[in-house]
Length: 390
Image (cartoon, rainbow, N blue to C red; front, side, top):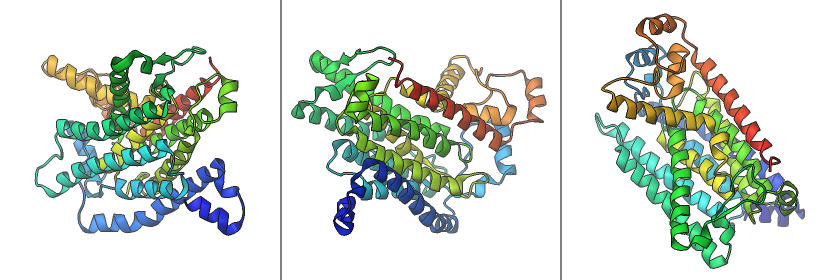
């Protein structure tokens, strides 16, 4: 392990401290993303690796994208983002930690699914990438493999508490699914699949404005990093009356790497974006957020930590279902929500004449992104308050 080599070389235990390695992982990931980002973007631009980033059927949105020159912006920036993240984790995290190993496998696996989806879009004429069912199948295979490995480890190591859910607000309350036999195991796997795969898709849906997904991931990741660190400290968990998960603190190093990589990516993705993330970045980032919540036993708090992502995914799903069942009627102006705010400064469906008036005074993309960052930060702060609300 790299920190052990540094300890031996410099004769100091500094490199073994988690707090130091969190900072080192963040700085390393940021530096790698910044260093590799420019040449990767040049290569993507030279090979015309771009796509139509309009993710809705809105004519107004398509027109706005054309006016802002987004069609000429390359995508697949997630390749250097995730590469920097994983390289930093491999350098600074303990690779004998089951949570870290599974985090690496999950991130790499979902990145592969996203890469295939992006690659098909960009190399096959008129191809929209993987079908929804194929993409979900890929996410499911990766996610179930990782969760299955966690269940196997929990069973054979005697750590049944890894399969326990802890409701927020309630002191000394736990749902011990391991005690429910096979039914409990199946319920645990199904629920955790929903957490991880749902988070993966939520970040993917949110990736529609310059800096939005990366910025919200950074904020939510910071909150989950704190949860992981605290959950792994027996002294802190005893004081706060929250569940203790042995070795969970090591996931804070992974969280640090994720936050650093997102910062490096934002350097190029901030408005006006020089590169877009693509599915190769959004799918693994979302999955990693979900996995951190699983490790920290904050699955039931995750909807608050990542409320912006939840709202974006929910709006897209509700719009699709309602549109099909009502022969073309809509609940929201445009789904996902950030596009409705971008076009009309409103979320819910408006009369045509009101839409026309609002379109003349639309919110700027930077305004929408910044305000959603603020909402995300407020939700992350509120979630941290739950550490003491027991």
